Image 1 (spheres, one colour):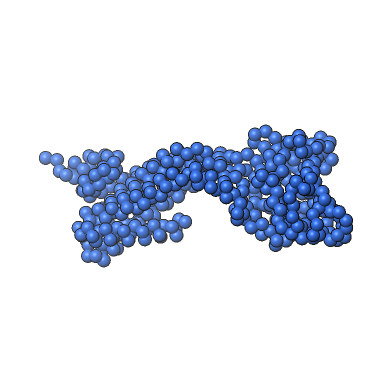
Image 2 (cartoon, rainbow, N blue to C red):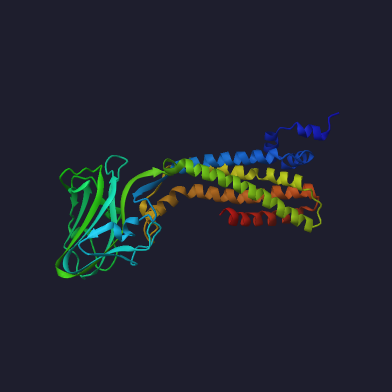
Length: 399
């Protein structure tokens, strides 16, 4: 006659894992007869693979507007006064725009008893402003603290290899709605469109596919002391998916995080449950409890599968610069649109998270009950405390 242990050893791990989902009591009793580490390790592999799939779906649907410069700080052109030349004195000012994409200073141009400030930034390219992958907008923020009157003229020049090859844009000042002593934002709908025949004139052999520098020129009516500040100078390009930008890196990172999350949750939850059960007078053997808790974490895999399925129902989600730039009060319309687009999926993810909390605690309580043979109440208390302490500790360890 075949023993129970021999029968259990013949049960395949995939069947044991599946049985944990619909008949955990029977599955755990079978596992106790022949506890094998291979089961939790297989669940860990499934979780890592599922997280890679989830990351692919999420990043392929998340589109972010591309900008230049793209270094650190992200607005490096207005963080370093040495990059500029001007007919005015150049310095860095602590009067600047606060936001995720912005550093801690702006560039200040000061001239005494003059009418014009010309500021030039070279060696920034080549920047391609043509085709579907080119940069199509120029934005910056402008403020002058002297004089109290508006400039009468503004010109933007874009150089192509040399200063003799350039494009010129000179909008009427009245169309810009500029105001003295506040930050005027030539951003968003007010950003300057590039590569358009209507607004730009050209000189020499200027080429939109080869922009290498720019010049800002402001003229006032009559001599005065001028202090002009410029911050947040960006070229804006097409939107690209996170997967296109750094898909492999994202997936590798999430695979590592999933691995660490499983291992830390598994070991911490088992260890805390073991200590608490001992405190309640239960008799435990480490290996069976560790393996049963590992099987209980199949809930993490199910959560990722459900989240992935929810994400597949979404269309592409676009994150414009105004939203990711992080300036308070900007990008609210984009934020509202994203929230409206993702509200159902967000609710599914929240409900699933709560369900997984309850499900994991229930399976952990069952594991403690079967191994330690203590009451259901004590098992539930042990599992609840151990699970949430493990989650808290994991958040500090992994972040």
